Structures are given as structure tokens and as C-alpha cells.
Length: 422
Image 1 (cartoon, one colour):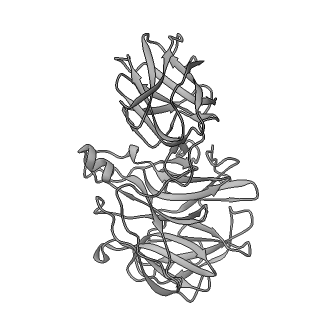
Image 2 (cartoon, one colour):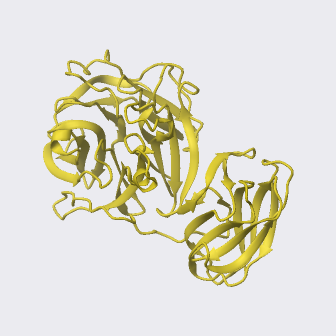
Image 3 (cartoon, helix red, strand yellow):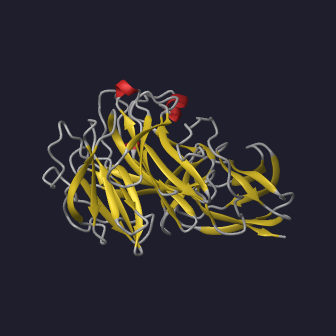
């Protein structure tokens, strides 16, 4: 996943990303992303996979690519903006942050013929970022490949039409990845610099969303394990500001070609007393968990902090389910708050095999065993059955591991799970 767009909505942070699964391992193949994927979290450490929420040409007939999304909510709808490669910007709408998103206008929202876009030498018409100011006026920032190629255009209240021509902003070493956020009356326009400027994330500051910008400094250096294009998404969640970005650390770890296989990451973003941004410090473990996970409500099985051998797929009951789990594979859920203790574990499972089970362990895949769930043969891989087991020894806040045992083939699917308190 790459190019994170952000949406804070009903107590969760949703990250939307270009889908690098669609890119080849060939170092010379280029970017081919034509769908947007989404993950979300309520605690910044456990993330729920929502899969593909928008795809071309399935959901937008005129586009061949869907790059670098920006997502915003207004008037009960969710609006997703994307680049058709570097050739125009589209918009899609949904009633839910996890889609499905559909094209409401059947054409590009912004193109080279849009007043104010040109003249611009070698303009990349992509990387939209939509921002709603405190007075209700919406703006979209976009462009690429030149200091004078930043554009901002007003959007009408319907969020799917423009109001007037685009206006030019100049940003030193501007390359791509336009982003706007506002804090304490200051507008911060951040962006990726060009290769000569090391592809950092730099920023401008102003008291206006369209004019009067001055150079502010560096938001973040080129991330470790990246060495190529850079893209940020800045957001506030539960009182803390964050810097989402992509690097290629997962591909490095797996030993696969890194050119077109990126992954998301998040760090804290802090400010100095004068309102300037403290340069982001990159870490190996990202950000703190902001609250414990409640195990006494339904938890989607595709919610995890880490995993081994796990895949997800479309579920016959809606959403996604975990699939392809076999003997020795596991799911880690961080900071599960059992409180005074749990007495029962329940899960919706499906399996075409036999002699399979899910071990519930604390601290590690082989840690303290608190319960064992027997997974029955349900007949078909999407025939779901809710089963339960007793639990002993689960109290306080713990890292929970669901460890699969017995399946020598990928025969265990899990839709959701929950615990029952003592």
C-alpha cells in the first residue's frame, strides 16, 4: 500500500492507499495501480483490513488508474478523490467510509482544460488533496513536477463540481504529494520535494488557504528503506497529530524487489511553540496505542497488529474474512483489555478440513495458553458456524495471539470473534 489518504470518522482513523499488489515485481514495469484499498483503526496499533473499496474500470468507466487518494466526509457522504495516473483527477462517493464508492459525474472533475490548470510546464495532474476550511469552503490541492505547478481550486458544496478557476501556488522544489492541514489558525501546505532535494516532505505556512505562503521547513526526511517517491498524510486523531507515509520496509524484509512494493507507516507529528513543525523522528515501532482493544464486542478477524501466513478474502456474509491460515500461522492483536477476566471465547469459523483448532495465547504465538477452540468441518469454506470454548487466565491488558494448529493445508477461515467477561 502507498500514498496514504486519511479520514477521521466516528472514532476511527481510515487510511486509503494506492494498491501496490497490482504492481509487478519487475523493476522496469512501472506503476499500474487501478484500485484503492482501505484499513482502519480505533487505537493506532490494531488495523482492520477493508480490502479494495474502489476500482477502475469497475467503479469508474473512464479511468485506467486510481492513484494517491484523498478522502473527506461532508453532509452524510464520503468523497474519494484520485488521480487517473498523472492525467486528470476524479471523484467517487459513498455512504460509508469502506465503500462501495461510485463515480457520480461520469467524467474527470479536473483536467488540463480546467481553467487555471495551464500553463504549467510538464504538469502532472494528480495527487489531489481536499480540505474543508472552518468557514465551510472546500478546496482541492493538486499538481506535480515543478515549483510553479501547485494548484488549488474551490469546490462547491456538492463536492463534485468546481467553483471558479484553479489558482497557482509556488513551492520550492515541489515534486508531488500535495497536502493541506490547519492548526490554530495556521494553514500548512506540505509536499514531496524533487530528487535533487532528497524527496523530503517540506512545508509552507500561511494565514490563508490560497495565498501568502512562506517556506516553513522540513516535516520529515526521506524515510528509511524508501529511496524513491514519498507521500504523506497528516491528520489529528484523539488529540494527537500524526504523519502517515509509505516506505518499502516490508519488501526489504521479505527480500523482494522494492521498486513498486510499498507499505504504510505512521509516526507522531508535533509542533514547536511558534507553530512550526518539529521534524518527524522515524522509529521502528511507530506510535503508541491510544486505548486498549475491547474483546467483549465483535472483533473482525481481519483486525490485527501483526500476522504470519494470513490472507483476507471477500466474505459471503459481507466484508472480509481471514483465510489461508494453516498449522503454525498466527494473528496478533495488541493491547487487548480483558479487565477482570474472560470466561469464554466465541468465533465464526468455516473449514473444509478436520482436526483443526485455534489456540488462544498471551504474549507470543507460543505464550500462555488460555483456551483452545475446536474448528469443525462446516462443509464449505464459506459455510459459517459460531463455536465457543472456555477461557482461563485472561486478565488485564495483554497481547493476544490466535495460533492455528492442526491444519497442514490452508483450511481454516475466520470471520469474527469475541470474548465473554466473567
